[in-house]
Length: 406
Length: 232
Image (cartoon, rainbow over all chains, first blue to last red; front, side, top):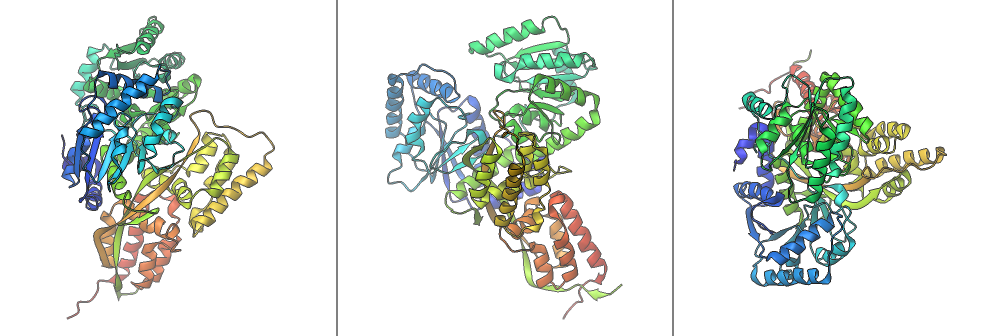
């Protein structure tokens, strides 16, 4: 894992110095992170990167994982989907199974941190151990709970209400709850395979491998095949653009073979694209980070025409690469893109087509948007900002008021 | 051209850094009536956040995007006239958040009274989520006692430090004037330079632009003077 020093050429000396100044006020704290898995998934990925950096800054950060059997994780998977607003068949036996494992974890897991940072719903019931403890309990919710299933949300609420604070990833996830809620947006790691600088040779070889024309302007959307990402709408918009401009479209996303909806969407997208040789549907295995990075870097315009979006890390990735962007003006995308300043927001297929055309034809304008976008990401959505927010969160738990003099 | 020595300040100027954490309020706004109701009643830290966070968040954009209220009524409600009026509120004229809040509320209220048409609703996904800003003020290792030292430090401190002394000190901490001008006038005895900096409208510059402007003004003031004489 990279050290803080390695981020300095990217974010500047001042940012690293500032992190050290802030961390100095949190050095005495032990922060115990608890989640449900040590490998796989976004939470483990961020903890893997964050913990070494916190330790480097002198904060005693730890990471523990709760235990649970297949039955428990089946239930928590259902909870996860239901909190995302998906219809799930959940019965009383599911709640019972959740409580049995939670009680087992409460008996076996020792909570020793000054701050207990509990990630997502799986370990939420650990808050039952708070009686008699001085520690601060924080629930870090990484999932989109803007439209949760009422039954699951009501079940979790008594636990949530016992926490000292909660953290959500986007403003639209906030809830009317009696405890303080903080906003800590996700981030991208500029040194990861998905975002690091690539040589032209690497980019060319990826273009070649996917039979893409390096001479033709390329419009790209990177996202899983999901109706909410509107890949069919992107095709329609692209075909409107094609009437005036010779260009190619790349729709790249993971092959989620375990998700029936994704398979269905991919099939429809392939059918819809079959007659147009300038549309390239690339279902590539997850973990193909260098390939995604190269495709983004080779693009003339990047699209993220989401109809609903939690945060939209693909938007951060595109902007970080300085690319002109056309994106649906929804959810967390609006945190990242200011219309006409750092990208173009659209609300319809026609609007998307018009914006793509504008950017393909006015490359200077696109370049300016791309530059602004990259700076916006540098200042607000890189891992170092994420780290700073966590440090501030830890400090804030021990202070009151809106202006804290340290 | 006068040839006076650069003064040494009575008090040292300590540079501070200001960083912030955003807190969510759970309030979601869909139309102007809801916006007005909440603008009148939310804590000052919410008004402060939505009229200032963009300055730190969009440090490099020129021109800078308008404040959140103006941006939202224009982009989500298509209320261009009101958006323009909210954009043109001259924040630097206000010495307290309370006064700024009243101006914003009054602008929205007048628009609502005037417009006879039905209330526009934001589309799903375009609602306005109110947030507040929690400021953390930290001392930096830097302090100055002469203009020369001040300039050298100003060149290297983070934009957050400049933000704190130019914006937060004046409005949120209600000092009435920015910290730089206050020190230059009362401690360093350079009232002309202090006034020049105080007259800047910091809301129409990027923070980097502001840094350059202040450095330029200081440079001119230094050019008019010779370095301090050695005292034995």
